[in-house]
Image (cartoon, rainbow, N blue to C red; front, side, top):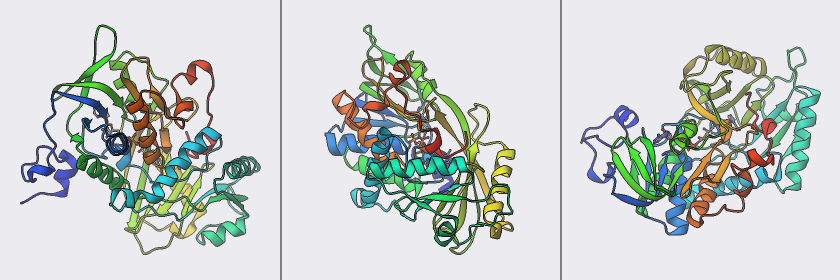
Length: 416
Ligand code: FAD
Ligand code: PYC
């Protein structure tokens, strides 16, 4: 049998004549109990928990490209739960606890590595904000601690704590249980688990319409592979949620922006943890392959381009070289972008919609990878039971009408 990784990445499993039958995307059935639109980590996790915990197995995941080819396969994999508000702490900590047992749950190594996430403070204002987070997190039973510059350097020796720089480091907040995971393994692990429980995973199948009956309830979707019926539809299509929800006549409070990242040539292990600096717009870790994984801020303008502005990457590399002078001579190998959908309060939207049978999970913005297991877990319960899971309940679409916002702009920790 002949196949190439390039074919897998560009065409997905469907349509590759060299794959064994059981690896190809199945033909869609005429109707499913639930259709999930979007085969990223969140959509696949939702399908997995629908099947594994709610015994809802007549489920299809429809993906317009290939599994994990959206933001799931494009992000810098930072995992942490150090958000400010109780509602956020609950959902991100729920996710973090699931990460801790995920490789065992899926019998698939997602390479979760709790190497610690350190968020740098460069100004008095940063220090006050992060200390507030440390206290709020600890009240919620979430680990987070304040470090002096010297303690920060002990934890991450390449860090420059000199004072002769634009933004000297005045301290840092450290979540030791935070870390990284392997992004595509998460998609594949959930896909394999869901598929084994009977879920159909159909790639190269773009949803181009949402069908409703005379009473307005969802009856199925139109796709590039024909019409498929469904009792319930869950939209989990980061970056494109507004487009999909628009097909059902629902206007979303979302803006889509490119967010970019880049990796260096691989080197031996030199970087022990994850470091983030929102003030000077850079975050960095080292992958198991040895590449430095570096992320930037969002572009200043909305767009569906899967590449960020070059000047944004230059600015990020300036910041990296200032914080870690030993990396000044590193060469960068490749860069890419993803499209993130951002809500006004930088918190997600999870739950029911004004359209009966239509559910939505979106607005994770620059920070949804860490939430993948928790998001899928509570969204599956919400779809199965037709009412919000208690952890998802505060994250309704309704909050933009009532004004009960959950402002996490500071904890998002990425320049917007
Ligand atoms: P996706 O993986 O994007 O999945 C959505 C899927 O929907 C896509 O595969 C897409 O092809 C599909 N789709 C869209 N429209 C249709 C349609 N009409 N029909 C069928 N399918 C459709 N988060 C963190 O927590 N930590 C980080 O360090 C981090 N770094 C990031 C760095 C970058 C550069 C980027 C871009 C994002 C980063 N994020 C990070 C955010 C994180 O990647 C996302 O929030 C998360 O991956 C979203 O997952 P998802 O499954 O919802 O989306
Ligand atoms: O949410 O931690 C995060 C993050 C880091 C980089 C992009 N998002």
